[in-house]
Image 1 (spheres, rainbow, N blue to C red):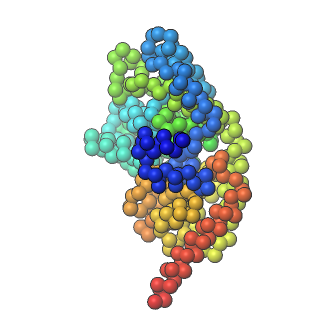
Image 2 (cartoon, rainbow, N blue to C red; image 1 turned 60 degrees about the horizontal axis):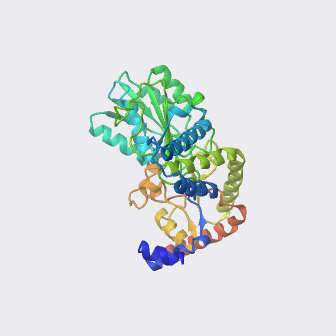
Image 3 (tube, rainbow, N blue to C red; image 1 turned 60 degrees about the vertical axis):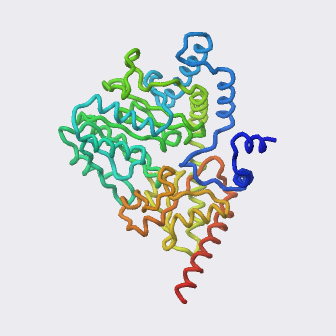
Length: 408
């Protein structure tokens, strides 16, 4: 009955629809791209959408009820950051959040020089490309072979006209954790504003705006089992930031438009759930990752784990199997029932070498070999033997074929 509804209303291709019914057989290893909504977040979303549909800006009772939910959601998100609710601004997601945060900070600071790194997410990288076209000078910091910013180069890159630095907290492809507190402390002394994309660290690392030393940070809902289309930015109230699209009736408003109250409420619930179980869940995932990597290394194929072995989040594992392109490995894994990726979802489908791998010093062929496994609630130790069996079969078939053609 439900299948017929979707086929008729949305005209979904029948083969595609029924293939999707087999997804329960898929082992999902792509949580850094997105996570499934938690049951509680989904329940809240449906309830709010059904019963509190008013516009939160309207003055009647329906609007007031929606506004109360919006304010309660801001309070919840703020509590996870040790921040004030009025300094948390909801967005449609991290891409919009990064764009607005960076541009709002630039309006508060004179100077045409800005600094970022060579391994930022595309949502930040593309903003800086646009700013270059508008006349800003951009310095892109190199990283070492584990993905760490070279602090000495950062120090040497700061100039009198440096207005802003934007560096991610956790790399979405190899999981490396940057020393945000140390960098932020240095930048404060220089009087330089600091933005951090904290999408991959939120819910996985403790974030406290009192100690992070940032002026703005961006987070996202769908990375922590909330709905897509919701995110938030914390803006430092001590900075005289200005909205990209100013509202003359409300000068403190960060973003224009009608708030998506159901998504924001579900985001807040997902955040509350995630933060409450963060330590135990991350430790469980760390154990899973270590055991899986140990089993992968036991296979007869050469494998390289990319990124920092210690100072990294446990839920992301970057790998290369020398001699096998990542795109091919990903497609073969998909056929075998393993959902993995070749890097950030925002550059999926690109035939170019992985940008992070190139920044780490890999040659073009090595950069094309990269794959990413990222873990979450759905992953348990009993899946490991099946993952190994499937990957082993794929690698055996590939290298047997390669060796066959080499001997021809």
